[in-house]
Every structure is written in structure tokens, then in C-alpha cells.
Length: 450
Image (cartoon, one colour):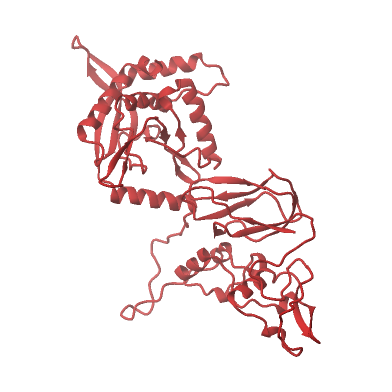
């Protein structure tokens, strides 16, 4: 029997997924728990396991194609030999894997009916299109009985062209006639890769516009968004346009913090992850959030509106990855030792670099830290990661002159910290108090180890 493998729903916000890689190929034996396919969602790249045993019969969605959740992406033959016709098949049309069709006792067609007189409804056309790459059969009637008559697959021409909604939208945007595109997907299906190999047709000029448009002197190269970049763009646009924010900046003396970091790393074994400045910042920020829980909060729109003050401190760390900006989460950062934060952070950054972060790795954050200090950036304003209420932007540590209590001039290492806050739930005084506590913890770093 053929088992349909469907595009799974891997996150609450997922509506479609893209096939990143097939880990099994047609003809391969599959056991429950085997990794079958890598799927790129709006949040991460995830591996999907097989739930049934059998042989992978066919792949319906090629690498690089986006399809909605619930779409059949492949079929698995469990070896039982009972192969039903695909869902929605026209009466009398056999399965594409050669099963004998069940006689249609209610058929009323005459013996001289042409095979082309079969049902051409969208459902029937879809079933034919799925099997057009393999021999099929049509049911004909003679003497009141229905008999299967083999028909070459080439004679079962689909009533419509097969392409996903994404491919159809891209074709419209690029001015491509899908009828003229030779599909390379299963059953002649047009996939995204087929469009990428074609030139983009210029948009039709308006009636008042010149007959021909001059070429773009900037010589741009379009890089289409993948699912993750699309989600980043959507979330940050929503945040920047719907959340009333303000920023406050403070300067932290991190001279002793950097000395403490050097001492900690000197005492660690060679195979232990090194403690980074960001690891110490995560711990210090967690302590400041515990002291000011109103910053560890998010906005809820129900009723008159509400502040959701979170009882646990889960800090997200903004990481640049091949897929774009991702924010894995260090859970209960206020309860973890710095060494544990370093190990967790190192593992998450490695997974981000390999595009192996899961939705669980990036879920439930209550506050985010974005550190661009390693790039030499002194100060910047970050955009809140919704639905969180605030984000901390961290700049580079710089040498600055300062006065000691005795009036002597000394050199200190300082760092600028900028908090962007949702003004619906966080007021200026609360933001200032939070930064005051944070800079005090960083100035006396032994508190970070407490």
C-alpha cells in the first residue's frame, strides 16, 4: 500500500515549507525513525523522520520548492501490495504504480466512448497529472462490463499545468508564461528552479509610459527571500511599524569585567568552551531583569491591554547565520553559572552556523541581547524582537580617560549599552533603573559569579 508523506506543520506560524534536501531517494529502504527529508520553515531548518517502514516509491516535491502544509511530498510503499488510486482520481483511472482498477459497476459510458471523454474536472486532471510520468490505465465498457485498457502515459495529457502557488506567483511577478515552461519536477511539474533559469520579462509599460524602458543602470541581481528571511522581514516590519518604542543609553565601565574574563579562561581546560564577553553580559542582564521584572515582559492586546510579566528569564542572543538573523534562547539565564551559559551559547551558535536550530531552540524568549561590539560598532539602536518588550544593543569596549577619586587620570575600558523598549509597557524611569542596575553589576563583576 502506498503511504502519503505530507508536509508537516513544524511551528505555530508555519503555513508552508521548502524542501532543503532529500536524505532518502526513490528505491531506498526506510525504517521508522530514519531521517527522511530536511525542511526549511519560516524559523529554521529541520530534519523530519519517517514514521512508517517501507521503500520510498517516489518524490513529488523536489529540492527548493515551497508547498503548503498538508501537501503530499512523497510516497512510501509499505510492501503490502494494496495500492489505492490517488485521492481525487477520476472514476476508472488506475494508480500510477500499475494497480488493476476496480470495475465501475455504475458506469454508463458506451463501448464506443473515446478515452478523451473521461472526466476533465480539476480533481480528475490532478490525478492524471500526478501519474503522467508512468503508464496508467483507463476503464472502458464493453457488453455491460468494465475492463481496464492500458493507455500510454503520454496520452494522459493533464488538463492544466502543474505548479505550486508560489511558482505561479513568481511567474506572474516575473512576467513568465508557465505554458511555455518545460517542468523538470515529477510528472512535468514546474518548480521554482525552472523559473530561476529563465530571464525576467520586463513589466508592461503604462499607456503613457515610453514604449521601451531603459535598462537598470545599477545592474541589480535579485536574491529571492528564503522562508527564514521572509519571516525576519515580516516580524521586524511589524515591530518597527506597530510598536511605539524609545531608547536609552548608558556607559558601563567593564575594565574589571574583562580582567575577570581573562582569569576565568586561564583556569579553564583546553576542551572547555571559552567564556565570551557576551556570556558575562547574558548573566549580568539576567540579574538586572530579576531585579526589574517589569522589563522582562511583553505586551498583550486583549481587553484594555495588559503587561505580561514573565516569571522566568529566557534571554535570546541575536546570531548572524547563513540563513540570516536568528535568535536562539538561553533559558533560565538568571539561574545558570557563567560556565553553563558559555557552553549553551557555544552549542547554539554552532547549530546556527550549520542551519540546525530547531523551533524549540528559538522559542519562549523574554528579552534579547544584540551585540555588535566584535565588529567595532560603538553604539546602535536595535529593533525589538516581538512579542518581547525590550532589546539591549551592545557596543564595543573602548579605552576612555577617567578620573580617580584622588584626581589622577587613568584609562578605563567602557562599553555603551542601548535599551530599546516598548513604551506601552515600559516607562523611561523603569528603563533607566534597569540600565543603572546593569552597569553597576558590570562595574563590580564578582556579582556576576554570585
